[in-house]
Length: 526
Image (cartoon, one colour):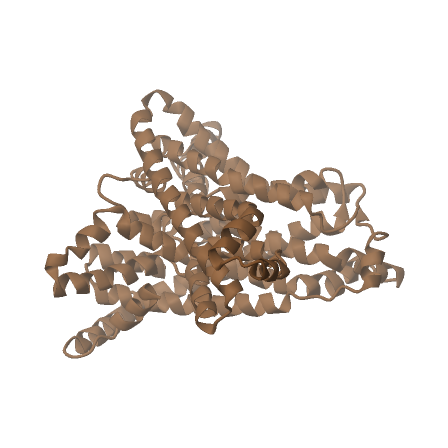
């Protein structure tokens, strides 16, 4: 709660500073604020349309239709989850920019001069990057919603004489609409929290404005005001996501479950197969295959001059911070989930809900919300050296990671607890086991997989995190994400390709585990 409360309490200070805050807000409203607002809204609208179309269409293709290669596409469509959005941005920029290999080859072949393609670094280019990097959020949720009961309902509608288009419009789409809305909300949260893409493309969003106000202009009040406005966007998206999640509840009757065994996906023949292949292959190519190939080209070209020794240091720093955060986040999540299960007190449930909302807070807001109270304490008690411990050691960055990623661990642990019957706790209590004994001897053996998954997800998220790490990392402790951003900003993409591809390899681990989980628990019988 501290980052949010600090931001909300700082942008309207009392006393003599209140006039200064009003003047800063009035000045921003007359200069940069309209640009921030319009660019952010425009980007969010483009990403909304992009992820909804790509995610829903691919989910419907692999769930409702049968064609050769469908099972491969089911897991391959998850591959862009392993790609940080800023890595995709670096790859496309290097390949498509004026001095890139594609335009150079075209000018050499056609004998033309000047630019052959429009500029990549703009709002449209950023929307393209976010669409193919974030559509798996919509794809996963829509695939789950469509796979629960849609196949046999589509079959029933076919037997009643409804053509395919009507079945898709009046059966599949209404069932998938809440899932699509929830997936869009998650994708937009990632878009609003992003700093790597918007900074590299020079786009003036609220996140870029926060860093500019804090780091370039040294104006904490302006940064807090912009962070508050960004929180308003996030709160709206949280409301949309919660509303969509509440609507994602369907009753499945015995007849529906029995009939699902006889229901089959619609087989595709002829040119329809080709369209299905293109529909599913395009997002994989755009969001994973092509960015990896684009990054491999400068990597291989500069292979001899790559900083392998320093790469080991960057990787060690990333792994060290990610490991510390994963252990602490899992410990906090396990303690909270156990107390919620054991007592169910309103204060405990409220604490778990507050911790669960941390993932929605953008990294820029976390940075401002943590550094503001540090500055206040430093001015009030300089002998405490609070600023040193937060900015010169790993305390501040791990704190920021925990604010954001405890929610990831908590959700995984709570999902594991949901599969444990409460009768186990009652039996342990009747046998005289204490709370700690129940946790260690009854819950822990059954929660190992959920805890391991939570630690892995937090580890990967910390490895890829950029906005908070860029500001709060300790001195001489650059991580892979920070180095990739700095090298790409200096147009040293050959060197940036090494940490970028390392992050992609790390991100593949949870994607592989997720795809195995989805294959081991199919949503329908074929």
